[in-house]
Each structure stands twice: as structure tokens, then as C-alpha cells.
Image (cartoon, rainbow, N blue to C red; front, side, top):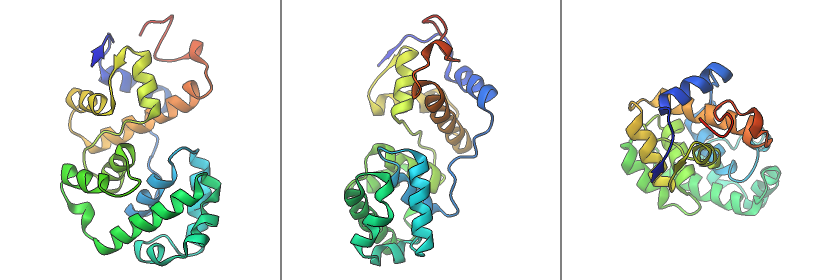
Length: 209
């Protein structure tokens, strides 16, 4: 890993929090809704995920048992708005079947839970860590595309596991902090990186942090 930043991750967090305030993320009524959202949010905007979740709730499919028994073609239509709808419908079927068969899975320790989730078809590191952090309330820092981009701009280079280790070793082991930090990075990424307004960036000024 290459680190060239001058400020600590705590300073970055404070700057983001001062600018954006508390994010109240992840919006969900149940842990399983977080699981569904984590699958659907891959390669799409959250607004599309909200629509799909609304569709599923209207059909009373927001629990593992019901979702696992749903017709896959019906699921495809309900989640079509999120893109890659056939792939996501099948992944929802698989993961809901797993959760229906393993109702206490979220009680496992963070690393063990993460390992199990990564063994499921279609569940990558970001999805697994989102479930561990936001559904199971276990300490595992989520690294997404916005986090990688922000870190790159700040001179912090590394792969997924290296960046995750960097965050986790630099911050207190604190679930609410991990949640808030990740949510702030997402908001930062949408406001600045997504709109490509780098000159107005609140973290990087004149090419320097």
C-alpha cells in the first residue's frame, strides 16, 4: 500500500461530518431488508433500489421465506429498475433461501459471517461487508468505488483488503463510526466525484490535502 496523505482518517471524517452532518444510513426496517438492498445496489443508483424495495414490499416479499419462494420471473419484473435484473433476481432467490435456512446467521462473529457470505453466489466483498456492518451490526469497514476514488485522490493506494485494513487499523473498532464514515464517503462521492466537480472538492485543494 502507498500512503502519501498528510491528514489522518479521523480528520477526514471530521471534515466530512462537519460538511454533510449525520447521514442516518442504511435506511431499512429490518436486517433482511439491508441484505436485499446490498444485493440490489450493485451497479445502480440508490433511488432505483428504493423503487425495487417498494415493489417487493407491495407484494409482501420482504422476508427470507417469502422471497425464497417467489417466482423468479416475477422478481425480475419487480427489480427491473435496478438493472441486471435477471442476475439480481436469481441472486435474491439464492441469498433469501440461504437466510431462510439459516435464521441465526447474522449472530456469527464478523469474520466468520463474512467468510460464509463470500461463499454465496454473487456476493462479493463490498456486498458481504455491507451485510456484516449494516445488517449484523458487526465491525467491518465497507470499501466501495467512492472510497477507492477518494483514497486515490488523497494519495492512499491499495486493493480492497489493503484499504479495508488501513481504515480498520487507523480507526477505533466502532460499528456506529464505521457506518457513519462509510455513509459520509458515499455522500461525498455523489456530491463531488459523481458530478466531477473536483475544483470544489472539500478534501483536496489545489492538488493537496
